[in-house]
Length: 117
Image 1 (cartoon, rainbow, N blue to C red):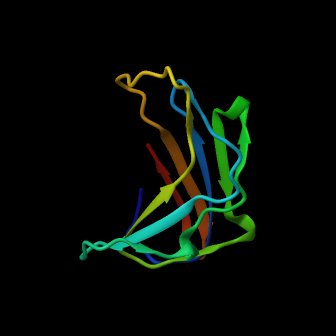
Image 2: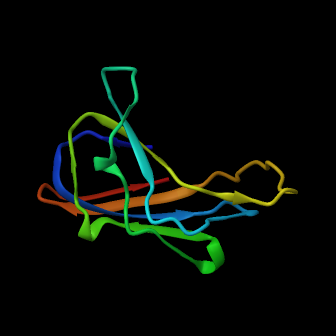
């Protein structure tokens, strides 16, 4: 999930995801999105925040989305949640510290933005 606190026009984010140990990413061109206005509780589906240009690399361990060719207009005060597909081996265990990490960075008319976890 990404919290957007400032409006951005023509935001072209690049998102790099790293699969947790024991998982991989299948090929996927899009990460579906939904959003919530910070002052409300309801999640809404809108494909205008979708991440596009998905490429899997590093033996399925890295998934990169690059919206350079599909910029996003993002309103202020929104939580945006993304969904990606992850493949897990049938014998995989849930272990501490096995969370998925991501870097969400990009350029807009308002300046650069980077989010990391």
